[in-house]
Length: 218
Image (cartoon, rainbow, N blue to C red):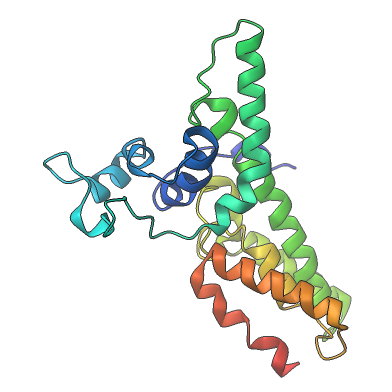
């Protein structure tokens, strides 16, 4: 709670690619990403738009669409809060307070970091529960606090639009679920939940696939 004032609701870097899915589907009703790319932060725009003002040729798919090389998982996790933010912006307009309902106004962009904190803390709780199966609760607690305070995990406030483990992982919660204890004794339903979590964690960030073999070692 004490760190909440440090939240930086700003979409930057690869976050523009992640965010493009939900913004394009909800606001434009399509999967054409060029307009989202042009609304990115300056460094991102420079990386995808050439000096001639055209989208870089390596981002043009065979059918003429601008492809999105970034994972769709973050947009899936952001959708509930995005819809709430969009609804809030629409409501403000309905009562005569003009707020752009274009996916980039403060009520909408500011809603993006909201679920990340919940995902982060759920992930930490799952990490603690997993560690507690192997060490004492005190050591598990100290390790979990270390994950939060002494790792890039704290970037959930500084860079909320990034999903990578080195920055801000909405992947932390499903990753921890994938690594949860007692995998050998799981029921078929629990393995089904594990499979859904495994799929989500890979869609959030492809390299999270390195977590998947771990339950086989438990």
